[in-house]
Amino acid sequence: MELSEEQQEAVERASRFVAEARYVVALAGAGMSAESGIPTYRGEGGLWTRIGEPDPRAYQNFAADPKGWWERMLDRDRNPQSPERARFGNSMQDAKPNPGHYALVDLERMGKLKWTITQNVDNLHRAAGARCITEIHGNRTLLRCVRCHFRTPRDEFEVDPKDLPPRCPQCGGVIKGDGVMFGEPIPQDSLAMCIEQTNRCDCMLVLGTSGTVYPAAGFPMQAYQQGSRLIEVNVDPTPISSLVDVALRGPSGQYLPLLVTRVRQLLTATAP
Ligand code: APR
Image 1 (cartoon, rainbow, N blue to C red):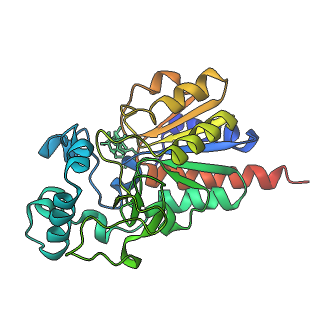
Image 2 (image 1 turned 60 degrees about the vertical axis):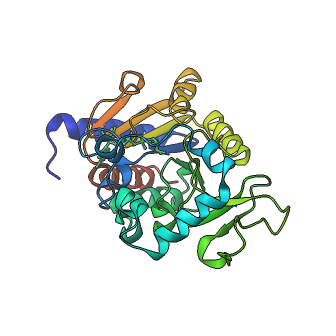
């Protein structure tokens, strides 16, 4: 990626903030996965832009008829032409992590990135090797109990089509996909961890998110108010841009490897 002098200066400033920081936390959004071939939700070509946002009462509808929800999901899994599959496509199924995901994992392994909060359900951070992570909107490869938050990989859980909805083996609660639906409260365990990590950070990387969906969109404001440095990586400006110390205006899959390479050089240069 050819950088202008101004862009090089921005990468240098961002790298110094990260190298000097004690506790870096990343907040990731759909833009992180755009270079893996997964459409974002908003803006040009976004999924919601194309097919309209889901029903804001999606969770209430699920809770009213979990059996019907499971029947439609099993139909989608069996039938590639199902309305659900047509609506959401297959992009997540075949996607692979991109250099942006791997750069974050490098930063985690260097001991610099202490935690990643991702809004993405595509599992790509974990597939790239991320360990210190909260998937605030869930993970498409997991199932979750709505009562006790028991989670299990979807492909390790036997669903009996004649006995729907499946029940939690721990508490008997209803099992659903781990993905947080519109209208569904964020699972308490995930939310508590996100708040704790935001409170601890003195530098937040805000990566590929439009900053429009709460509570995630509130974390950068919380970080700003406690005096943390904010670094945004996004192809476009967002409502968060006015708060940031440095904006790297371009693709995360290209900027994050440059940032992490420079951070590593700075840390090596200052190593005792
Ligand atoms: N690199 C960096 N940023 C990018 C890239 C890229 N290659 N491509 C797009 N972007 C930016 C867009 O400019 C936009 O600001 O990524 C952002 C994507 O915004 P959204 O589509 O709104 O995604 P996100 O912010 O993650 O949405 C939050 O909304 O519908 C819910 O649950 C869904 O988790 C999602 C939440």
